[in-house]
Length: 120
Image (tube, rainbow, N blue to C red):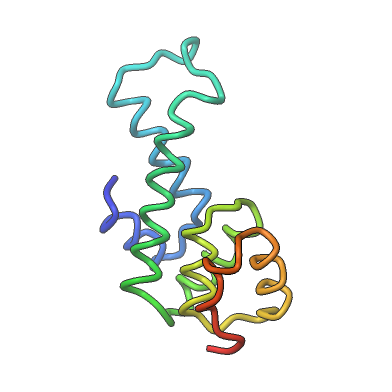
């Protein structure tokens, strides 16, 4: 799975957790892991690095797309990746923005959040 195919899946209705899981499963398959060799931490870091890169891409290339904004909003409820928060709060009109801004500004230092507008 690459960024382009992950983005296409999102646009068709997949969630970001589904994308993360599919990416990890692909790595496990590509590297030939047997079920008894797999641990929860196997490829966790690699999968999260891919998700950060994907979030950055979504914010840069798909700002304003309703489906993408919804997927990012759901994702930030489960993770504290700055890239996902930044993509969401920099380029998407979302319901509950005020509370998300408050939470994001608590998670990340001021210089990282200063460019987040109160409204998009």
